[in-house]
Amino acid sequence: MWASSSASWNEAEPMFIDWSSVQVFVRPKPTDMRKQAFGLSLIVTEELGKDPFSGSIYVFCNKRRTILKGLYWEKTGFWLLSKKLEKHRFPWPSEGSQASEITQEQLRWLLDGIDFWKAHTEVSYSSVS
Image (cartoon, rainbow, N blue to C red; front, side, top):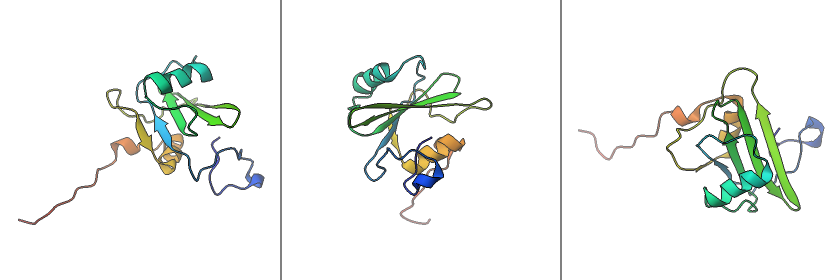
């Protein structure tokens, strides 16, 4: 659904996202999936404190974690991207956390069902004792 930077026209993926400059943000709280572009753009502005016209992708998930929606502004209007799982659930951050930026690679992992939010965090030490 979301095009990759290495995709070519022949791969049957849309080529509307300029991946060289896009940022991806997730809203951890559940979102009412009846909302369309206008309602989601209000959440981006009022709750996330972001600009929905910035060229970033904003990703939302329903309470059951079976539906993802992405909001993206491209020149003259919003793209509203959606993916619904028939089985299983999307990995998603805890509700209490703030909206966070994820990488494009993490977005691909999210769409593939990989829970990178529960991955080990890097540990660094300054001495051995």
